[in-house]
Every structure is written in C-alpha cells, then in structure tokens.
Amino acid sequence: MKEYDIIVIGAGAGTKLVTPPSHLGKRVAVFEKESPGGTCLNRGCIPSKMVIYPSELIRMTEDTEKFPVHFKERPLADVDKIFRRVNETVKQDSDSIPLAYEKNPNIDFYPKQVRFVSERVLSDGTDTYTAKHIFVVTGTRPQIPDIPGLKNTPFWTSREALSPNQFPKSLLIIGAGFISLELGAAYQGYGCKVTGLTRTDILRAADGDIKKELSGHLPFPIESHYQIEKVEFENGEFRVTGKTKEGKKIIHTAERLLVATGIRPNTDDLGLEKTNIKTNETGYIRVNDYLETTEPGIYAFGDVIGRYFFRHSANFEGEYLFEHLYGAKSDTPIQYPPMPEAVFTHPQIASVGFTEEDLIKKKIPYYKGINPYSSSATGMARMSNSGFVKVLVSEETEEVLGAHIIGEEAANLLHQIVLGMYLKAKLDQYLGMIYIHPAISEITRNAFRKVRDEKLKRIKK
Figure 1 (spheres, helix red, strand yellow):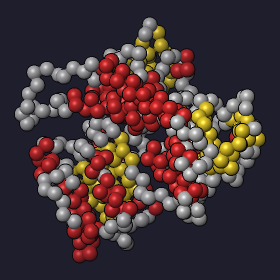
Figure 2: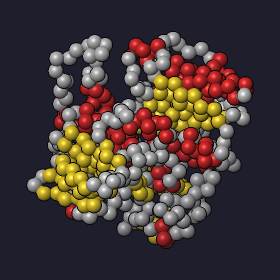
Figure 3: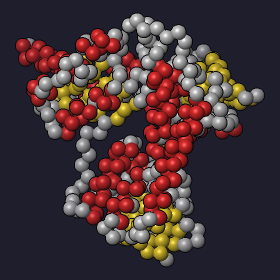
Figure 4: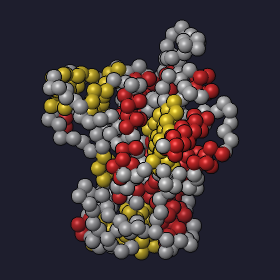
C-alpha cells in the first residue's frame, strides 16, 4: 500500500489542496480520471466565456441605429476558428497541470479512476493508497432526463456544445437555467437559430423582478411550461414533440439538441458504500461545519457537497481547508461570506443574497430600491431600454440583504454591493460614498436612493 500525507480525488478545485501543502513538505497524491482542471477549465466557465465574448461583439452591432451608427452588413464570425482557439487554449492549460506536478517531488499525479475499497483505503484496480487526510472533490455531471427516445439520439450536453464538430444552423435547448441561457445566447449571436424548451420557469430560482425583466428581453425564444413527450432523430434532424401549458401539441425541429436540465453529483462510482461516508437523498456528500464527512479524516468540498455550484465557492472552501488543517485556523468552522453569482447571457444577470421572494417567505421586513439603467447619465448615453439594479435592505439593521442586477456589466457592477455586504455596510454608508459621474455605478447609487425614499415614506406614516 502506498501511503501519503494527502490524497486528493479530483484535479479541478481539488488543486487547492495539492501544491500549497506540498510546499510545506506534505506528500500529496492527486487522482483525476478526466482532463486536469475540472469542469470549470475543460467544459464550463472558462471555455464558455471564451465562446460568449466574441458573440457579444456581434450583438453590440445589432442595436446601433438609434445612436445612429450604421453597419452596412452584419459582422461575420469565423465560428470554427473561434471554437478551435477555445479548445486549443483549454487543452494547453489542462496539459500544463500535470507537467507542473512532475517538477514537484512531493506530488504524484495519477490519471486514473480511484475508488474506496475500505474505510480509508483507495484502489485504482492495481495498487492501493491511503493518507492521513483524503479530499473528495469529484464535482458533478449533467443530469439527463428520462424523456422517451432521448437516450437513443446523439444529443449534446454542454461538453459537446463547447466543442462542436460542425456549427449547426439550428439548435433546440431543453432547459432554461444558466447553461441554456449562456450557450444559447452565444449560438444565437453567431447566427444559429436557437429555440429553448422548458417545463418550468426560466431561471427558476432567480428573483421575481429579474425573471420578469428577462422574459421581455430574452436572448433567444424560449417556450416555458412546455411538456416534452418524446425526442426523435432521423436524417440529421432532431424532432421534439410536446405540448404547451394549454395542452396544444407543438413539434420543434433542429439540427442539434442541447440538454441542459441540471446536474448530479459524481458520487455513485466512488465506492462510498465501503466507507462510513454518508450522502443525502440526491447523492451529495454530507459534511459538517469543517467540511469533514461522516468518516473522520476524509473531507469533501466543491459541487459534490451540494452547497454552492461555483468555482469561486469551491476555491473558497479549498482555501479554508488548507488554513484549517495546515494553517493557523484549526478550530474555526467555515463561515461563508456573501456568495455572488452571475449568468453571462444577454442581458447579463448578477445576484447576491436573498431574493425578494425569500424575504417574504421568511417574513423579514425590508426596504426595496429598483433603479433602471435608463435613469442614469450612463444609461442615457447608452440609450438603455432595459436593465435595472435592485437592492433589498433590512428594515432593522439597514444592511443589504440581497441585490439583483440585470443589464450590461451586471457581474462587475455587483461587486461593490458584495464588498459592502461583507463589511456589513449600512444604507447611509452606501449613500455617503462618492460615485464617479457619469459611471455606470451611479445606477447602484440611485437604487439606494430609492431605498432611502421608501424608508422616509414609512417613517412619515
């Protein structure tokens, strides 16, 4: 049996527990059955943003006559070259990870599947391994719905959509979450005819005002509350049969079909039944406030624990574990700061904290301020016809409970609110700072002014 100080299963976010401990002299083994770098680097946030950004350049030319700026022809993109560049760049970055590990005498990289064969012992089918600390960071994979006929077709997941053999003229997307909205917007921007189909609301968990605004400015047509009955593929064409909420039968056809209906944890092929590690009813690993599983000395973090599904949250958890186990914070449970998220679609969406629906459900008193992009100097300059900043402020503490933005630069615009929430800033402090005029951040200031106005109205009553 090979013994290490640390074993990491998953070379995505798991890399946070590989190189840093090795610099302290810890002997580390890292196992990865797919490409190093995990979902984010290989088939998620990084390649998708590389695909999305050029499509945004095209979209910028589509609504310019109001300024008036005229383009004689619609810009043309060499889509094949764009995807080739994306995949070559991602492969280069992924390949560089094991090369770096080879130069470190304290790291052994194993490009293998590994499973538990007993409580603290792992096997790759040939050798066995154990360690003082074991970290399970195996992430998630697409959840494929049980739709009649689907599994017998060459449907896409996000993996194939980010590396198509040939760019299609038409695309159907099942699902209306962030993957659907991001990739669908990019494909539409490049000239593909995109149609979305979902049996639920678009961005189901988003704040209600965000969903309402998005529904009026969708990046591509989406038919919500569409119940799919069957999927067929014949002569290079997908055929999706279903019915609307009203019961009307509608058939959609396209060259390609992207299935983006959620994710499931990669825990079903780890041999967890040979250990004391427990999962919840959907397969996510249960951990305590120190990210330790129900098997002492074995930890899990990232998507596989089902708390948050972002690379930035997984990075935070990995950094916490490094400090907790090998640094100066050995007795401190993990405390998550405000966790922001963004959907890089068109229009862009960013959120942090509670939605208004959350606050109503929890019966938490709050003030609300919504300010449209158009109600600012920058919005006037850009002739914005959509988008807003929404802030939800505690009536009791006057701290921000949640913020939701839809429109240009939403992800960047959110960060000043995230910082304020982290520092527990109050309404007067958001209003007391000076905002550059006429920067886009004045939209946020005006949203806080709306909160102040609502507060004053309630006081007068």
